[in-house]
Image (cartoon, rainbow, N blue to C red; front, side, top):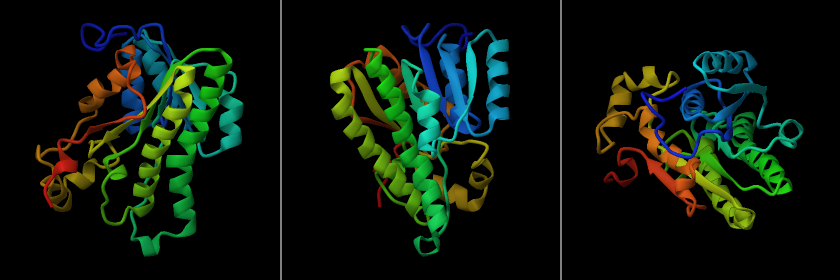
Length: 255
């Protein structure tokens, strides 16, 4: 299974990867992208039917994919599912959002966002790193953060806090695990079109927001490919504890 006519990055074929949140959006894109490089992918999400269907699609195209029903917010379940599995690449992509003013963020909403977006990646990173250390193997962990880990917007307080925490978590884990040969980095997308936000960005409010992006456009999942594959491959072997922002210049837009 290849992307286009040939694999994009050297050295990925034959490796193994875990992708969380693989039932929709960027998780599906990253799963297909890795499989296209000859990576054997384990696809994890709560919606087991969705990941099973994606695994069938990848297998039919000549790739190697295994489904895994998993709620990353459940630390015990994560440990049980991953403690004996060693991956070369771990993609912490599972995430959720909530749109409401901070005054209207109820406790259940705050818990849901923080548990999924921050505690979930911590659970997955710990379990997979423990397996790497036990096997005396290194690996690379890619945490999918956001430009909202660096700047703020209205009505997304819990989400912004979770992504800011994820950026700092990535740095902390990178510092601790470098001696084990484990690299941890954050990929921080700006506004990327998915099935979840497509309708919003077609509205006047969405178009107004896009006018704040210097490139004046919505990003596509493929815009993340170069940075993502760099972090997944050994070409980024001297990179750890850093962030790559892919946002069309949004974080440098003028006030």
